[in-house]
Image (cartoon, rainbow, N blue to C red; front, side, top):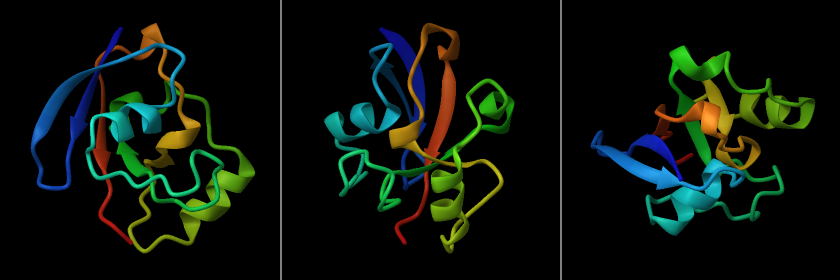
Length: 104
């Protein structure tokens, strides 16, 4: 298990355990943090939008073009926006902090 720090939409910080190899979206849905993930991880709905702390942004693979395009259309887009269905937890990301973005 790998530690993940999640800031929910109320600004409350939670330290949770995530299995390496799982997408962050899967952990957020399992723990019921209000991430709808309507498309089930197919990178087509943006209902799993999170902000990755800037200290961690360079440690994860850059978003692919389809993710970048979808993110750029969001009202709450930021430079550190990611779709949690596209970010896989690994042991090297232990302690990573993500903030769940506001609903669109």
